[in-house]
Figure 1 (cartoon, rainbow, N blue to C red):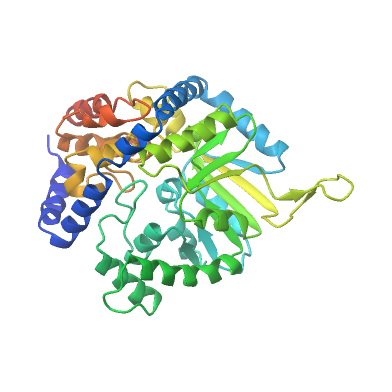
Figure 2: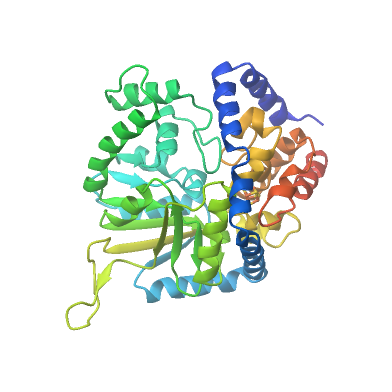
Length: 400
Ligand code: SF4
């Protein structure tokens, strides 16, 4: 049996190991991330119990996924939002295109791995729209024409020099030679402010979706999500069906756990969005379209998730809250970042996600590069059996 994917990827990885700038940026980022979660966990002991509750809530949904999808759809409708269930990436892209319609201004996006999964930005650009990522790391990825190297920190492979160069060359912003991150952030803030105000459509992901209320929860630090979801007249949230939790309380808990295991706790902002903006200030009659968006759409993406939910151990990957903790901890990922992975998801969590959303064969071959140390199992807040999933995939590399 030949392993074409692994052979091709090994060449790329060997080149990366020699890439001094990539390795310096990655090693600095890994060093900066080290111990962050441990310090958060020591300061806020309740988080461990909260993670346990999130795991229980996730298990409940996965055992009856279709029921919770239906409940979410009904709840979003009750809030005067528009729910969509997309079978695959193509359907999700078409739904967004229909909504964008005659949209004449820029489209602003906040970071979403599901948007990456369906290739949404590139698709909309190809359809002639002006599209901007508003998360700084994700904007750098857009400018580089690359892909995210970590779930919560997409541009960890870039040095300050590289980030500065991209912003200067591709956005034409004046940033002095030798300027640091603060100057880059300030310049990008000025550039994006105009895009937020002029945008005809805002696209976000969702950390969690509450089936009981139809509310989505988004956690962030930059403040770009509040602007993306609050300023344009139309807001589209796109996320996987795996992000559904039974209640709003569970959904908020998931977002807090995600922030804590990402090492960024407390999160600066927690957004809850349940439908279009509205007011009942005149004679207590509800009117839609106040200061925020007039329209709210929620796209729930299947793309292999409902099928995967039926299988052990792969289905367990669907409980992943994308905190990225397993990536920081993995000795292979620490050298390669998401170059060890499929087209979107990389590192330990990326094996299962690639199998579910992209290609079982590709995931099976990529899993052969795992050293089997098991550190990912130990650090995952919701106890996803990552090494068991990877071992299962390895057996498929030899049999499929
Ligand atoms: S598998 Fe676990 S540790 Fe890794 S990103 Fe998902 S939730 Fe976080």
